[in-house]
Structures are given as structure tokens and as C-alpha cells.
Length: 448
Ligand SMILES: Cc1cc2nc3c(=O)[nH]c(=O)nc-3n(C[C@H](O)[C@H](O)[C@H](O)COP(=O)(O)OP(=O)(O)OC[C@H]3O[C@@H](n4cnc5c(N)ncnc54)[C@H](O)[C@@H]3O)c2cc1C
Image (cartoon, rainbow, N blue to C red; front, side, top):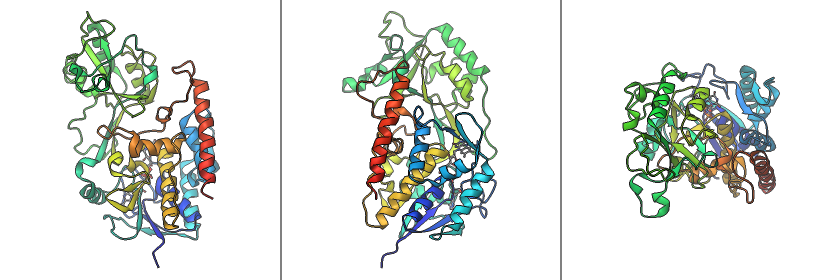
């Protein structure tokens, strides 16, 4: 008889949700968790589903917000993380904030009480060759397991830090100021020659920008987080501190570019934005990883000509974060292409945040269970929040520049006939969420 057990490694947001989903489909689950035997620098307890920092699941608005829509989709699928959050919620306006201890205790009690889930405490430090496994070991995957994963994937496909540049919605850039051009018009096709969005700066604008970078509020690294990372991904404000001209000779160099809106005037500096997804709806600001606080980032980046009214799909950051180059390594079932008995889920797959991690756990748990039951479970359509996320990490994102991603409407296929830009936003977001709910319900119904 084939072994129908699913082994899940990591009892965080993703692993707990995956265990719950698979066990509710009748699968025997063994959940392996290294805490409290082996600790991480951020976790404080031995509980499942521990929130390592903020106690917020962000917006709960399922009509106008992509995270709120993800909440809705997880609730519709009987998600443990959402049920535990709802049972332990605190007043927080439109956001879903929870009592973190009660939340994790709730998850722990549910996992321990489930007749089909057993728990084994201890570190897993190899990728097993037999059995069905799901790794949800998170941003702080233990070093020994990280080494085993890197040996399988190649060290260039597993990152230990993220260096996230801010991502802007393409339709919020002012194209009367910005223009499309690759440096020195490089590329064979017109698309390649116009692959970047460029924002020009005069000398005065550049000087004011450097001053603003120096004055902005910054966040500190957590203790134990920094171990030898800095090479090649310095925050822009640190580059600017090294000399006022450093950025102008680095990511903001104005060479090889002619301002299509004002060809006679040579910009003093140029901020470049590179396409971030195949849909062309998102652009990242090249080389602008930063430790500035979120509020400061929005203020400083809106000083860039062309981005005065920009909407950000995500802001920048640098963190300790173990994650795979999923677009090259995982198939659309979140299986490792080179070792299909192994799945990954959660933040280690290159999504970012408690909610996104739990959502990927929910999907991976259901997919693994379906496989063990001899059923086929396609991913949800990419018009849904879960589908948009899995599509992004397993194929939609640019593999070369892949960095962890939050759920956002820039990942959704555009709606025909809807107005772009800020003005039509409310109607457009409602259009996205209505379409998502219909498509998600159909996907769920198809599993019965
Ligand atoms: C310092 C820090 C602060 C963060 N702050 C926020 C925030 O405020 N808001 C937010 O939305 N997201 C935040 N994140 C991201 C957050 O970690 C993830 O969003 C979420 O917890 C990831 O869920 P996960 O299940 O993938 O990983 P985790 O929740 O971290 O779960 C992974 C589990 O795997 C276990 N594990 C690791 N290696 C092994 C092994 N070899 N064998 C057995 N078990 C193992 C770990 O002990 C852990 O329990 C933060 C991350 C860090 C590191």
C-alpha cells in the first residue's frame, strides 16, 4: 500500500494552515516543528502560528483591497488562520488585528486536537527522497536545512536576504514627465529598447532628494539579522551617505538616455524603473532597496519627477529572508521541479506577509492532499487573489530580479473597458474583487 501520509515541516502560518487543510480532506499529517528545541532570532514561544512582529493581518476590506480579498478567499475555504484571527480579533478600524498570544494558542489547540494530525518536535535538515513532503520553514529556515536546499537548487537560486526595491503601479506614473527607454537603446526588439521607465532630475531636484534621504526616518535591523549581507545590496540612503555624487554614478546615472519629453535638456540624474511582471502593470525602482520607514519612503519617492502621484504596490526593505527563486524552481503545484515529492509553501516561496504565507499554505496543503487522493487540483484562476499570487511566484514574475511579493491588484489581469489611473480606482477594484469571488467560488465548487 502506498503511504498516504503528508509530512509538513514548519508549524508557522503556512505549515499550520496546510496541515489543517490536508487533514480536513482525510489525509494523515505529521507536522515537524523545530521550536522550542531549536530557536530562531524572532520567535519567542513554541506555539504554532506565532506572529513574529506586528499583530495585524492588514485590511479586512474584501471589496477594495487585495489583502482583504485574500482573507475572504481563505475564509471561504475554511481556513484555520482566518478562523483563529476572527476568534481573537481586536478593535483596529478597517484592519484585522489580533491578540497574538490567544491567536497562536487557538491554532496550537486546533492542531493538537485534530485526530489526523500528529506533531514531531525537532529540526529537519535534509530534503527526504521518499514520501510526500511540504516545506513551510519560512524566512528563518534553519541554516542546516537552508544548506540542503541550496545544494539541491544551486546557491544562486536560494536567497538569504531580500533587498526589495519599491514597486509602483505603471498606470500611476506621469508619462508627460517620464519616458520609456533602455540605456543606450539596448535590445533587439522595440519592446526591449523601451524596457525601462525613466524619471529625469535637475541638479536642484537631485540635491533636494539627497538631503531628504539623509533626513528620512530609518528602521534598524533586528539583533542577529545582519550577518554579512551587505555586499551588492546597499540601501540607497547608505549609498547617499558615502558621498553626494554616489547615486549619480550608481543607480541614478544619467548616461545613455535622452529625455523623450524634453530632448534638448540633459537630465542631471535619472531614476530608472524596470518592469516587474509579464502583464507590465508593475515597475520596480532599480537599485532603490532601502531601510527607510514606510511613511518616509512614500514622501521621499514622491519627490521623483513623474512619481508625484505614484501608487505603490509595495514599499522597499531589506530583511533576513530565506526564499527560493520560485519562478525557475517550482511548478504550478508548488512542487520542486527537480524533486516532485517535495513541495514548498509560505514565505520561503517568495510571497511576503502573514496572510500571503498562510494562503500559500492553504493551497499547497490542498494540492498535496489532492495528489495523495489521486485527484487533480488545478491552481485557482489568476483572476483570484490566491491565483494571482501563485501565478506570480511560479511564472508571472521576472525570474532574474525575483524578490518577495505582497498580494496587490497589479498582479491581476486588467479588466476590459475599465478606466486606468487613480480616478477609476474604486470602480476598478470592485470589478476585480467581484470577478475574483465568482471565479474563486467556481474553483472551490469544482473540488467537491
Ligand atoms: C523579523 C521578522 C518580522 C516580520 N514581521 C512581519 C509583520 O509584521 N507582518 C507580516 O505580515 N509578516 C512579517 N514577517 C514575515 C513573516 O515571517 C511571515 O509573513 C510569516 O510568518 C511567514 O509564514 P511562514 O509559515 O512561511 O513562516 P513562519 O511563520 O516563520 O513559520 C516557519 C516555521 O518553520 C520552523 N522551521 C524552520 N526551519 C525548520 C527546520 N529545519 N525544521 C523544522 N522546523 C523548522 C520555524 O520554527 C517556524 O515555526 C516578518 C518576518 C521576520 C523574519
